[in-house]
Image: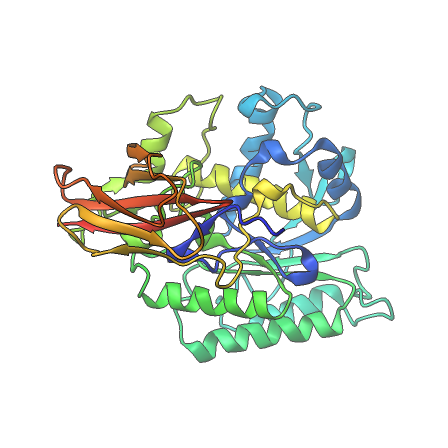
Length: 387
């Protein structure tokens, strides 16, 4: 039986899958403790990566740099060999071979324009050889480019990006090309950035591509309960905590302040953002490297969305705090309610195998909450508004 680990109704398109079905590295792929040493060693032995980026894309590099010392000092409870997360240009001394900004003629996916990166990639690799590698650098087997705001374009702009990436994949079939979404800009679920990011996600999942979902990674704190993107989150991790349309809180600093530096998170300086975001970008990067080298992540690291697997309804929504939760796929086992800071404020398991359950939290503060429903072997999350 297929087990669904997490189903976020507001963002069900965010999935991590096996490479044969498309690989999407997102917020479910940031638990560094799940990556075994063998997978890290395999990535360092097999991968030769070229990464083009400007400031936002440098978040991965900054986080990865500071991760080395954090892991050496047993952050997250890690007990791995010293400098296991080291990387450099060429992969010397047992490090990962990651060539940072090696391209000439383009800086990122939109600088100096929306097409220069493609020719810069071809110039860097050289003419494809019979193995689908670049004749100038046949060792390079991973290419990744990032955005720096330019994902906020038109549908045609993104189609052009996808077409150019696919063309590179066809010509250099021996190289893995990693697609990327663009950073959050505070315009929420209906904003153009999210629409364009979703366009990229849809293409990648439909066409078996590899995607590093930059936007989704910075849409969740490590607890993974609250989805901040619909709450107008931006690249600095600021978001609207009370639903009034104004950003008044920061999920990253709140999480950092409630956890121990050097144990639960490490200080770094990711461009335009907070240290925790740099942490998550680094963890997800290593999840990507390990996966590209052949590691198969544990089931608990996968948010696998199965169409029509479960229909959960919360109504009315918005409400005055009195609402009904129903499911058409068996009984509800438990309901948990979290506020926008990720704090659990309500829970109950007393349902007596019912498929429809009335909840009354009308005495709670008005605002946005998240209802997590545990039903049989599935978990769903729904955003609600009390007004």
